[in-house]
Length: 364
Image (cartoon, rainbow, N blue to C red):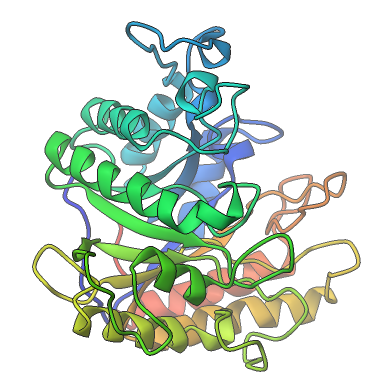
């Protein structure tokens, strides 16, 4: 399978993620989920592969590194096989927590000071295993969120090491696979996360005027990914702090990437500006942040329309297929009984229209 082009495109991929369905088959079968995804015009399924959780047995709890770490990849193997049979691409986000033996203090499996060397070994193993079958890998999930990569004061420096080591390891294992930087959370929250543009500058050694400091080379990436959530507002809302990037302010990220390429801080291997992938986006179906069903349906399709009109955005991915009112993060498009909610129906109509117009990327 060939990876999608790294440069910005006037056609946009539609993606979806629901690890409970597509990886674990909880409450809904994977085949049924893939069928529903295709109805939505989805071409790409994203899944998070958590390093410590795919090690066999109790290897993640050992203090000493196993002589040969062994990984249980059967759920992801099944996803890749069945998605490809349905004509869909799979992209994997390789992320922590790290196993105990790959952390600096070796106290427990955690996201604190993971070893870049050991993580690169892990990403290499995964890329070798799925060579030619997985089109794209993202490195770490929301590294600007303190609980995903800690301690916060060194997270940017840690992420640069994790990313650059893994980029090289994956490219050696599968030169055609795309490697994506970021998976950034959209907003700063005191004590919880850094603003994505601030974090990106810190990772890439540039100052607030987007000038690169000495001693830092150019980082290579096929794309940069962001999660442009803005749960409380319509997708056109723009009144957020300067370094935040929400669905209504994605141009801040595309403008930043232009500056970063000019500063020789970030570029593709061909020295082009990386594309933008919006790899998590949703509105809540229940709870205090939920909008009325008709409003939610309108906001979701409006967000996809806004993203599609930006030629530098190559992908927008909806986070959540199935609704589960018993969990806090309830953003799915299908009701708990598997029938379409208003948002599913509205998004399906939109993707059908855009596909007929040739404005969306085709499936395999």
